[in-house]
Image (cartoon, one colour):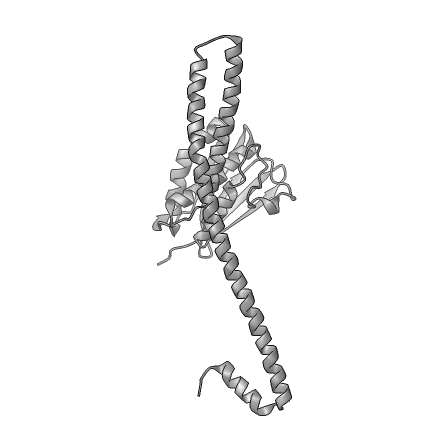
Length: 272
């Protein structure tokens, strides 16, 4: 006899119930199965459509990026030619060219952010002490922070915080948070990066003393294309969240108006 428990229960019901009730139950079960099969098929078609759409948009972004680079290079060459003539007409042309060049540079940056967000991440995992990773990144970023009037501070656990991660991707995720933090503080403030272990997780906190995030904006900060910065692409934080999630981690934020914000990344510890 088939040892499928569902089949066994149907056989028992068939023996115990009157024929009309048995037929009714069978019809209802068949309808539920049919509806479930349709839903699964629709979901599969939707997933395939999203995959194709992602490939299409990624290819389109690449196709746009290349001619933008050519346009930007030619605008730069034209600007250099115009700088040799000091007439008012040429100065006006130069200002217009520089405005166009600025916009093409901004568009290229948006496309690069999009490709980083939409592109496929092949994780190159390696053992890493999060303390060393953060130390390397903060050493690199300190000069940029100080140039904006921001003081860098770090705090690390006394014990190693071992994780198995793609070092370059996690650095990219943290760099997005640190750049946002400096932008949020204007020309003064403190940027604090803490590393610790907590309940089987390696935790990195990125804290700023900026203006804070409004309660209305807070639920949307990880949303694609949501940005409160002028000229921001709105893809930095979604990219950070995607990278963290691909590592099996979590990211959260809490903020208080007038006091600042804290972004917390938690990654699984490698305790093997």
